Image (cartoon, rainbow, N blue to C red; front, side, top):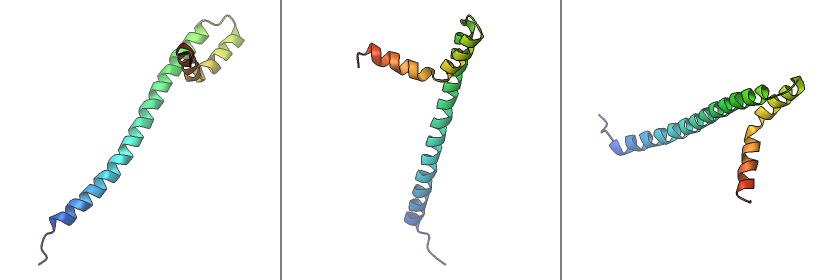
Length: 82
């Protein structure tokens, strides 16, 4: 019978765990950011459409809602005098 080599087994387990943990972290961060962006889009769309005086302003509001992070970053950098 072969002897059991625990050192080799530990190495194999460490490699598999490192490989699997790396993949899980990337997938989790992508999905949570997308959900937060989606909630922001819905909130911005409701705001811009509800304050629009006519149809075309509402349509423009939907486009603004799609790029709301750009407005947020611009305002933050402008506030920091950057």
